[in-house]
Length: 106
Image (tube, rainbow, N blue to C red; front, side, top):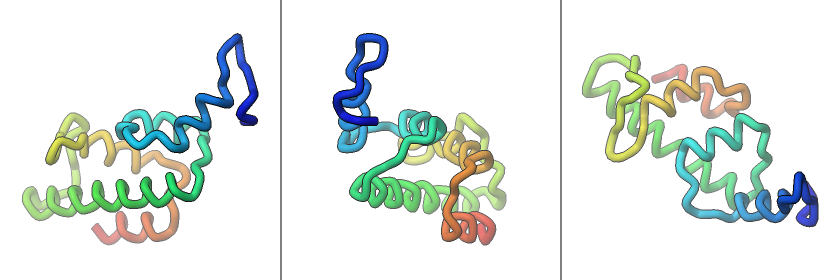
């Protein structure tokens, strides 16, 4: 979206550019933007990869503690909604090969 693009009186381009550099998007916001096909810049991609790895580590801890990976959707682990994250990974269309491999091994 060009930064000057206006949609229904709102500066959509400015908003999109802001989301690219906004440091405090929560997982729900990230998921919604990604589901809408949002394309991330390089810095945001690195941040998202780090966030994904953190959530994956929480999943591994859950599996170790509970003996399975059937995380209830409302389950929160260390302040992160792990259940929501797991549910989204199950239907996410654009997991990269590394992420797919890790999830299959878990």
